[in-house]
Image (tube, rainbow, N blue to C red; front, top):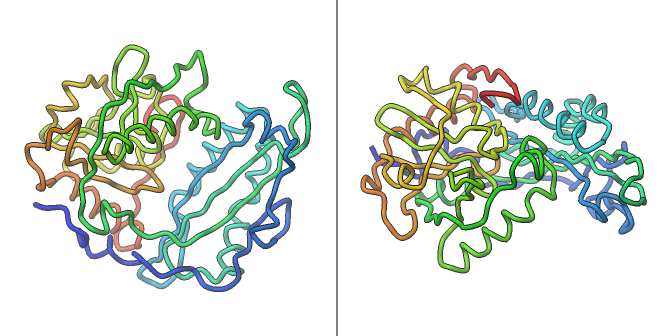
Length: 323
């Protein structure tokens, strides 16, 4: 079975088509033009990187409506990030209504990407209390080329590490946590790869800069443990929850470099990326490429659910286990 741009016709729907109407953003309690959604240069967010966020997909369903996908677990993770970074988690309470307002105001009719940010918007020094500013924006977003064109990613295993829990909490989706992975990604691209995988301090595989990595071993899907400096991803949780319904066994286990290279299939997943099959790791083309039957099965199930063609997998949310 070969992954293609039309793997499951539902996957290709909404691949293009920008949202129409004015580009309005929710910022400081009001809808404003995008260029007005700003923070002071002296804000704690810009001085010390105190800003947490969530990316949420909006999908056009077969009934013509546009709905957020797995908004509840995204908001639970955002609340946790706010608590960790000293921001007011109550800013999350009104987000569902704000999403509806943005969809109407921007006349969103196609697949889009929603960014929800909570930032320390007040000027201050390192130990000053943060005043939380909520910003929510929406922009059209279809498939990345890994699905739109049926391409496979070329990855390298970076020498850079994800910080351990003692350095920075992995469960906090704070902008500062992306500084190191951004460097690693840039180095990988400069070396001719599409992206990279980061390691733990013990040399185990952790995750990609903006996505979770999964291995396929026969009828098992395996992903690194949350304790391996892994962000508890919402799409990660969906895969772990959906696997059984597809006849697959799912596990969170330690993954070394050799195990990664020996896997039958490898794929990345995340809200923005959705799914990306991996064709090559450190210059070695995967032995089964371009046949990725298990990855294709998951992609088909995912798009059937987001389009409303199949019941959605329940994603029990916890930051301490599956998730």
